[in-house]
Image 1: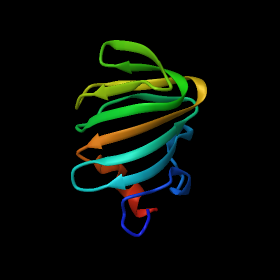
Image 2 (image 1 turned 45 degrees about the vertical axis):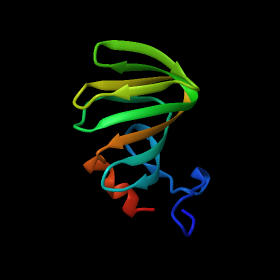
Image 3 (image 1 turned 30 degrees about the horizontal axis):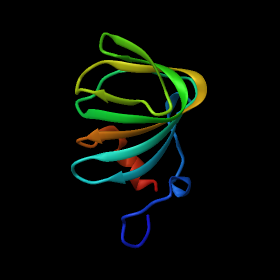
Length: 116
């Protein structure tokens, strides 16, 4: 983040390895939302969380399951996941790059920002 805290080049963000070979680049977090760039090579198992999630696919191709809907997504696709709705991802063209916004911030990801 630059001195003002207004700009960050995602290439300069810390790369943090998570489960299933997922790499997270924490970009921004405040009390209202958090932004993380994810690099996924295999899959994200079906899960749910209490926060709302918005995302945008920056590269790759994947099958997204959100609730009862399944859709193939690729670069340029936006998605919305309501709170407590089961969802998961199966990567079809690796790596998948997704920019995700969580509102409010996910408690289980807050520690990622302490590692940057």
